[in-house]
Length: 386
Image (spheres, rainbow, N blue to C red):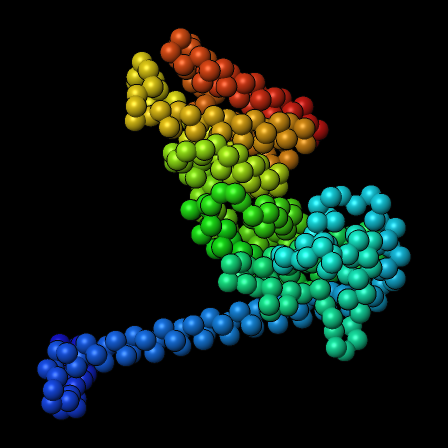
């Protein structure tokens, strides 16, 4: 017996003796042991909650500090007010939404006009104490939506990034990269919440979840932020993509098509980011290829596959949207015949359509359309300049 095992056995024996000696007279050793275990478990749960609360508070302070430093950098490079107002007429609807919606419910009386919000946003960046940064207040992180603080921070971060990349406000933010771990941590928290929600989505959907996916896609589309986010959050991103995919395929409740439409649109939004599009297309094609193999072994859709057969058309729609975008942008994500799922799909494409066209005409029609789009992407790639 080695020293470690001997000390462990001795410690267990000493603990047992201590429990027996200290137990009340009206309780057996077993009852007293169970009582002590319950007390320790409750204390551990309490301390864990306190630690989580402190970690949340620290993250919010780090978020506020990063925004403060970025605002200070903007003000040192010029007058952000005039530049931002000059951009306002051409601002997209998404930009206005980011400024207008903080993740908190506001009454009509509390809402301001977009131009006022733009001015207030810039003025709030003035680094004079006390610093009224546009970071969420603690009361906004409600029990119903505890992710509001992360969401608002990330939205304001994107807005500041947009400002730094425009006109006279161009400034080098590379010296903030050491603080961008705050961004990746916030994204991980947001992804955890998204995964939890979409595993059991509730209809009708709050606009918060749509904005969250939009914000996520915007962050990953940023060439500077994406490096930090993908390094820390790649596994969670993949898990989120798979969660959305499974919600579409496994859903079998009444009126599920409304849920599927929302979730499908979320996949399209994520796929609008070229860095994510390739993996999403590959996952979608994997499901299509697998189900095509199943249909090849049966003459008609069996009862156990009816729901899956109906749901697969949502995947077709998502694939069409992403492949059309890929063709339009010139194959920016780099998908090609070297991808295993694309190879499998194209190699069996003509044969599959010939075999299944009589039994499953609508299914094979969509396969044919996907084949055209995939070949279009390849044509764009081959014709692109070296």
